[in-house]
Length: 158
Image (cartoon, rainbow, N blue to C red; front, side):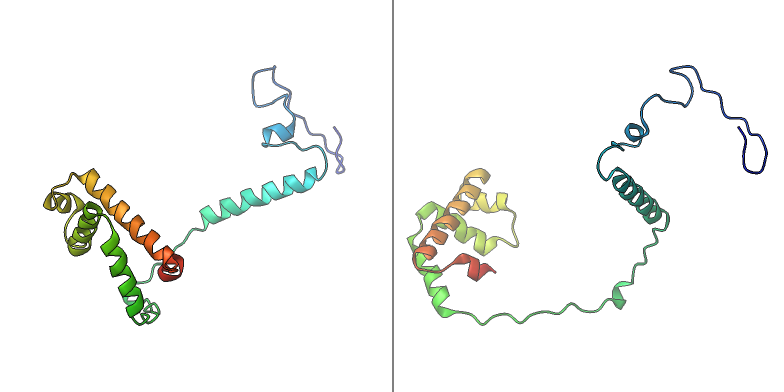
C-alpha cells in the first residue's frame, strides 16, 4: 500500500475465522447498536459522547466535603398556628372509631416515639400484627370521618 509520503507500510494479515481479534460482525453490532439507517452517524456520535463523558466523570471524580461547622443552617419555615376547629374535628372522629382500633391508636400516640411497636402491642394485649392492623384501621376510620366533614387530608398534611 502506498502512502502520500511515498513509504510502504504492511497491513496486518487477517486471522483465521474464529481466531484472533478480527470479527465478521459489522462494526455497528460490535459497538452495541446498528450503524445503518437514518441518523446513524448522529446516534454513533451521541453514544461516543456519552461514553467519553462517563469516562471523564470517573477519571476526574474529586469530591470535596465541607466540615459540618461550615454548613449554613437550613431555613426553617414557621409552624402554622394550631387550628382549634381541626383539633375538635379530629377528637370527634376519634370518638367515633371502633374500640380496639382506637385503643391501639391511642397507645401508639401515647408511647410511640419512646417504645417499640412490639412492646406497645403487648401493653394492650394484642399480637404485633393485630396491633399494626388496628392502627391502620383506626387511621382509616378517622380519615374517612374527616373527609365526610369536608376536611381534606391532602391540605392538612401538605
